[in-house]
Image 1 (cartoon, one colour):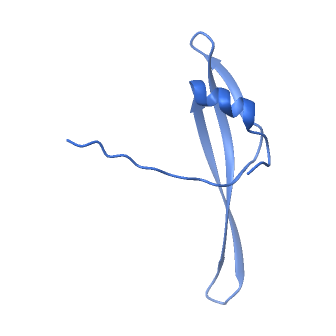
Image 2: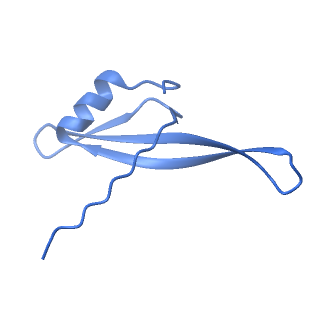
Length: 75
């Protein structure tokens, strides 16, 4: 059976700096909140802005990179 892989790309802004937690002998976990904005015209022709929030979790080496490089408000 072939492996099925999905790819999602979220582009937005962090709502806060990553929360870093330690687990299992100095391994790291980073929790992030990402705001993704969407703008479209509704049926009346008015522009509508919507923001969706995503809760993300990064483990191990990816959590270390998140802690080092990601800060609130950066896209």
